[in-house]
Image 1 (cartoon, rainbow, N blue to C red):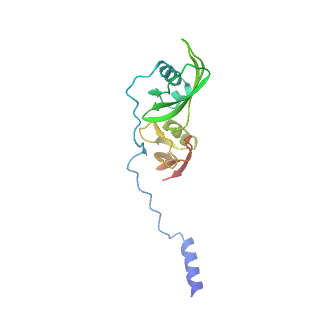
Image 2 (cartoon, rainbow, N blue to C red):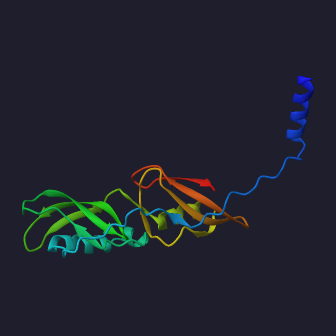
Length: 182
């Protein structure tokens, strides 16, 4: 009897008569959770902060990601150089560290600045999905998200001629993601 049931189960599994899989539910919105939007302080930026923000906004890297530093908050500068400051950049309602290395003070400051971790650019995600062969990619209207490990961003994509959904799950604070079908 057990052998007959096992044989029936094996034959049913291979017969092609199995019920078709139902598609997953359609997401209610594209994109992901922003959390609490980061609002820049009301106080104006200082000369150093304005210069660093202007410099970062002029970089190809931020321009290609459709990002812009809206505000920069740095700790008080005591005039000593060389010195490294960890500042907070406000970009598209998300914050990220900005490391500033001051090499010369005075009327003309010399510095090197780079955007640190903590932000995920939607443009970078769309570019990755395109490299993986997806077309007509829509990840919502947010240009950036905080790169919080475990958070998810849902995108509508075309794969071949079929419209589907994929989920990008953040796997590191630097904004690395894994892509899975929805």
